[in-house]
Length: 203
Ligand SMILES: C[S@@+](CC[C@H](N)C(=O)[O-])C[C@H]1O[C@@H](n2cnc3c(N)ncnc32)[C@H](O)[C@@H]1O
Image 1 (cartoon, rainbow, N blue to C red):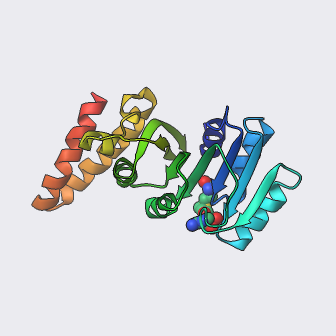
Image 2: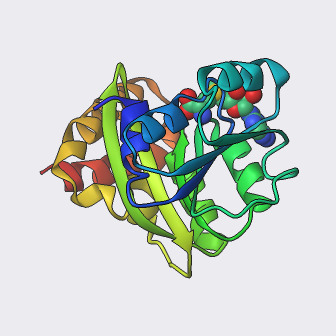
């Protein structure tokens, strides 16, 4: 399943979704075309992408905001999407976001986001993975207390139980093994911990 289809499909059962950094507006378009949601809210920090969303979502039940994250949004919503960005941007947006459910899809460094979530009153409800030229992970969160182990932070507390994540872990393991061959002793010590975590979940 492709990245944007996956995110849109996860909106099933929610009435109003807000997409922060909506860019072209495709996630809301897919979700509305498939009747997964009733209404959408699109937020963009940049005018160009916001105009693209406006033209792709013309006559759709969507309101548009030129806004840094949630700054200008005062509408109620059932679920938020923050996808296709770096973890630090996602964490910055989340730090000023209303307490709610979110679908988060960082481009990489998932462990940094999971660590942030566990320290900032978010609980991981589920994690999904798809391959769309690269592997993409969507982390579904809600407000709540959750203590994550180092293994959970690195592998994902839900993802590590999923059969469809095996190929992703195998790829990560082969990348780390390659680095291990070439790096200095200090780095070897650091990454051998992650190599062992990956080996544990693959076998
Ligand atoms: C790479 S695109 C990803 C678009 C889409 N969410 C996706 O998953 O394909 C990131 C978009 O987020 C927007 N963006 C970045 N920081 C933002 C912020 N703080 N508030 C709103 N939009 C932001 C950018 O302008 C850009 O259009």
